[in-house]
Length: 455
Image (cartoon, rainbow, N blue to C red; front, side, top):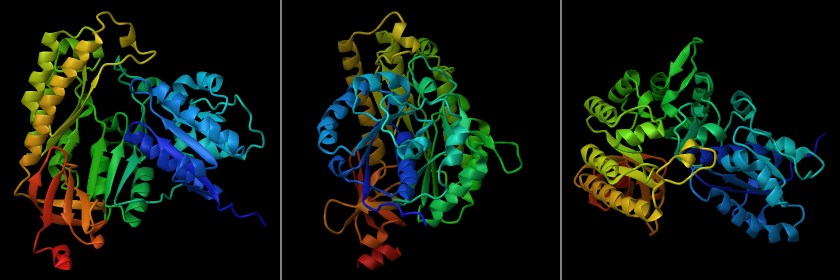
């Protein structure tokens, strides 16, 4: 008879970066659970520390080494603790991590975290061992447990990894590899499992999610639109979202799906990065500003209530004031419900790092401030249009005040209402009373069962 997993082992997982990293961290917790690891609230109570890193933004490595420095004394006082560095910084700088941080036991890239149990099972705490992230993604997904522990009414679900676009500012093709799409059957099985566990909304993830091209039920390629229709048929799964998309892969079938499927939420994250054709070409985006604007028109014709989110980079090499004004003009034309904007920062190994015309930091900061002011104004205006409307809200957590619950609108806005705990995990109609830039307030519609429960 084999010994049962020791119940007092704990793993502390710290996650940086995108939703894909959040999903990866959740799956690491899933594969460690059968080994007896429960989640720790703090690093101090953990037997295993996992730092799941992101390499997209500036100073990612410095943040990692700063955390490792803080953890070094903990490991010295608790010799049995193991430290694993995972994610994109692990892939890009694994050898350097091992050289600079002797306290690190394992360095595992994003395509190889499924082998963490294998490393933990080895007898020796062998310094310098590193799993290179050159394993096929099929192997990773095949070795992940089919069952997932649902932690709320909304869940991330990875359907695609990697990117073949090679934007000149981006490290993803080098850290996540070429595009790979999971088979449709595997995704649907995971989605059904989540729905059976109380999940009402799935957020489909991919570095280039609308390039999804998985094998369908009949052995032929299946696109994201096909997958969306299949997911909409799963009982209990009421909302579908996806991120991050690329304008080049927003095809006619997916646009039709937005028109056909009420389960597909009317909120789309569609990064453009710049409104200048010169800069878009230097970025290797593969589309023009006008092509992006034409796509927005098509999407809104198909789904008139669609709201858009975007990504913007200011101060890309060669960007002039005229180029930046083109970005502001595009933002004014589109009208965003929300957006993410960043100063350009050099990422090691990317072509843009060596480009001429690097923009001064002060200029980047000034342009970012102007862009953010416009985007914040648009977000506030969009939220204010919600006042007086009734929106279906998926309630996810308790509020800060007693008797308060918080959910998400179809447009991802936090919505605060007074209501019972029984609302959590349900979708209820809410009359929106007020709006700020970041959230909405409302009250349950009087005719709803939830409102009657409050009364």
